[in-house]
Picture (cartoon, helix red, strand yellow):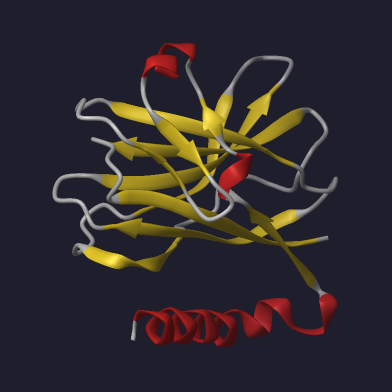
Length: 169
């Protein structure tokens, strides 16, 4: 039943995205969970897992933990949509992701778009969380881009399965 529901959501998402992805005007970039690594070296003493199907921390600590992955978007690309695919079966735990850009000359860090499972009902299945308002102009060579995934009160019940970025060239 869960596989059917997940496939239905993927189908519904494809129908919803069709006007944006039709006729080759837009492209899709998918970020795999195995591309992530913990952000801080202080997390080396925390158990974390990066598989081809999921990334998660497994700890009893109640701090927020972060993982990052580089994002390679073509010059002048415009981000149109952002999706987080995750499992949130925790009580107070949740997972979120944001596409960030770092201005190399000044050090400024901006969030382009983000999504989170915060407030979602517990569910052992994978779900799609849609990103909000997209901030920022087209991709510029003065910036580097990354995906930052955060786990509030991480446990094996809260997992990142991937992120989808739809962009126009």
